[in-house]
Length: 265
Image 1 (tube, helix red, strand yellow):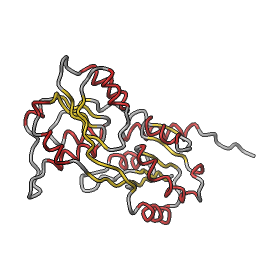
Image 2 (cartoon, rainbow, N blue to C red; image 1 turned 180 degrees about the vertical axis):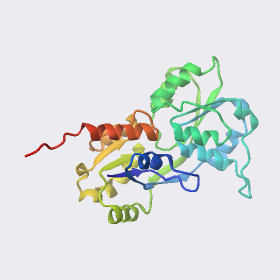
Image 3 (cartoon, rainbow, N blue to C red; image 1 turned 90 degrees about the horizontal axis):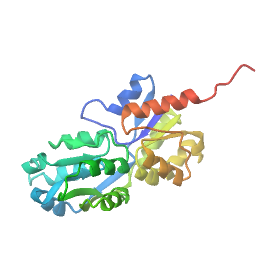
Image 4 (cartoon, rainbow, N blue to C red; image 1 turned 90 degrees about the vertical axis):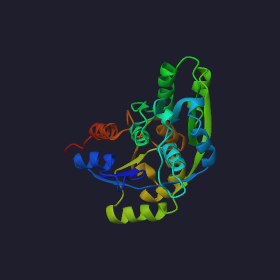
């Protein structure tokens, strides 16, 4: 069966964890990048990163926000520098395993890897945030939701927010989807990995099933993405319990097992 993952594949950094999980289960799988990202406000972020004494730690809700920090650490010769040492001993909060791995690559020790939503992360931060603590630095995207800032504000936890990237559809999305269909046909399962993926790729994806996406089962990496799918009029076949490869595979396998089989006629 064909599984199409609407995400950037991990290339040049070892085995892709999502693709490996499905391949190990005997499934045909392909990752296609459907989003493009433009970074912004990096000078402002660099300035904040040089003042670790003003913060209790950082919050990352996407790999792109970590990448923004990484870009701020590159010097004029594109040589990557280390974060100021004081950041290493401060709190770092993340959503999901991929963002946690990205944060670790900066030398940080993240909490929240098992959190699948901003609501769960807010609960974790509320439990761990030090009394009378300084603000948390929150580099984020222009399309970030109000869930985390609102929850932390209600808990009187200060947050210094800076929008550091914006999301658009990938310029080659039509070409990549056409190539996939030509090579492998229409997938049985399609997986969205973010609300942005739902927003920017849905028009192109209509071509997958002759303008009828209902012919394809669609899975979500988490509840926030599932909500975006529902708002876009898409039926959610299943949702991963946690944003990681094993949970996604388990959700899809459970959906497949629950489908009625045709008896003898």
